[in-house]
Image 1: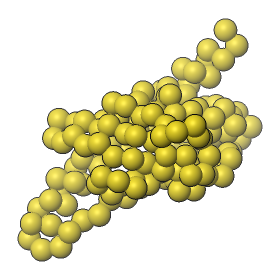
Image 2: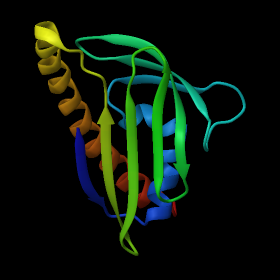
Image 3: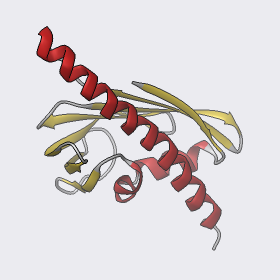
Image 4: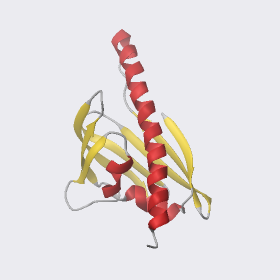
Length: 149
């Protein structure tokens, strides 16, 4: 699942906001807790204990920053629990706006049960990615508006 949007905040600000783990529960769908495992709380290899809860399911898992390029890309990938991969790609739209591309990947099993489960999983993922994109845009804009206060 993929979604694109433009956020009216500079790329450096937008990247820092997404990279700050304390902001994650405010914008990532279903995430109720997101805490670093150990001292490292940003950058490649940073790992986070994550709690997820939605109306359909709940899970505990760990996400690690599998890829991290300042002002360009953050990829979070599960290392325990159900597999999920969330990629956030950043590009300067203009000096005061960021183009954000969000991709969420998850496995789907084969067979009849897999096809049925895929429908449910796709519905959840579609809701999740819309939530992530709209919530992230709203939260970044609010934080950017408050930056000088």
